[in-house]
Image (cartoon, rainbow, N blue to C red; front, side, top):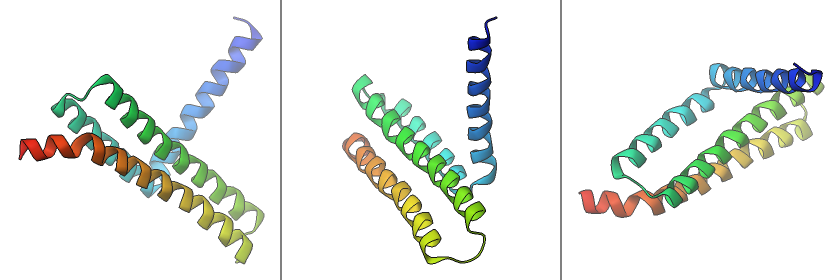
Length: 122
């Protein structure tokens, strides 16, 4: 196996380890995991289209990515500024705000995809 391929595999393992750490240590990631599982369940139950699957997957992926970046920013800020600092707090708030915006966008996609089906079902 070439050194290039070994490095790529190592990078992939590091990324998987990061996702695993995210799920194990971040309460909001656990909430995202439950929500993602529920969304997949609804999507299967309602047999959404391929295009809707794409929207749902992209939306969920955006939230997951934002949560991972938020967790990374929080750790770096804590490392760089262990005491209370207003600018450090603003950085953490901005990162958390990015997750909130992504979650709102994902919720809007979910409403557009699932509400018509739920209305018919009920």
